[in-house]
Amino acid sequence: MLVTGSDILVPARAGKYGVASFNTNNMEITQAIIHTAERLRSPVMVQMSEGAIKYGGQDLANIVKDLASRASVPVALHLDHGSSYASALNAIKMGFTSVMIDASHHQFAENMAETKKVVEAAHAMGITVEAELGRLGGIEEHIVVDEKDAFLTDPEEAVRFVEGTGVDYLAIAIGTSHGAYKGKGRPFIDQERIGKIGGLLGIPLVAHGSSGVPAEIVQRFRDAGGEIGEAAGIADEDLELACQHGIAKVNVDTDLRLASTVGIREALKANPKEFDPRKIFGAARDVMSQVIEHKMRVLGSVGKA
Ligand code: G3H
Ligand code: 13P
Ligand code: ZN
Image 1 (tube, helix red, strand yellow):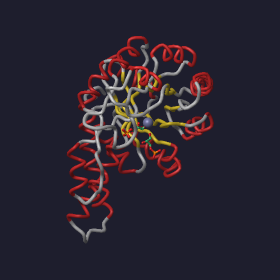
Image 2: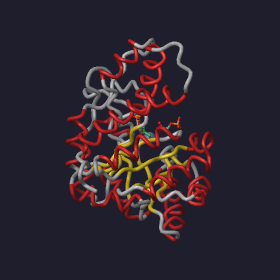
Image 3: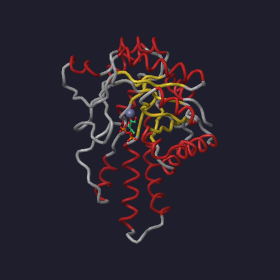
Image 4: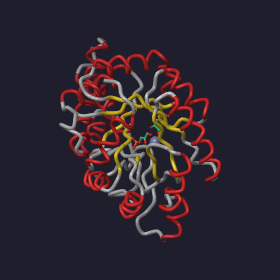
């Protein structure tokens, strides 16, 4: 069933497990996400960025909504990194059940004002809202506290922000970053900060940049002819711990980008004569399903629906 983000995330926060919010850009990605969620009895969020809306538009949103409404588990359709009030409203008109307003690059007061405006409009239509406070970006574990504080989310500010905006779930900057290169070795994630913010705020917290960039997938990508540098993602154990302390929504895009490309490359490498799209994109869907299953098991959302 198609539900709001809060319908999925409030129980996750209370039950100390995480729910993945996977980015989609086409039918095969959407099928892999929702069918795997059903097979594992897991709630799930499917998110479209503004780029995905430009690429797939209402056609893609309708595919997500159709699969979600026919699914036997809770699914939300979420706007990822909405850049303005107009963008959030447009997503709501398209039938999204959850929207993110990302005004985190603005000063605190402006971020608050923009978020509050979106919250008021969205709530009037029964839609729940994510906002972001702090700057996303990989940081090294050993850097001094002052430098970390300069862009990671400040716990006291987070409380003022949530009280002032009425936002439903909050993305916090904890050292993670978007993409396949999150740092050397085991990228740093500020567990202490998550614990502090989770202790002060009862609402679900959101971790962006949470792909694991699994070594096995990276190796298969290379073996099938892909080129990739020193890729590294967030360790499974780190995400598991983060969900114990307040993270309830876990954003994943890069892992499915890698998995789908691995499926396509392997299918074409194994059979260079192949040109049936079902064999090629079907292979992508299969590899994505494996990666999605792994993530759901790590976050503890399996069997929660
Ligand atoms: O946070 C960014 C997501 O990975 C979406 O990326 O804007 O290229 O669709 P995109
Ligand atoms: P990854 O690049 O780690 O998959 O993060 C995606 C994300 O945060 C989308 O909002
Ligand atoms: Zn993000």
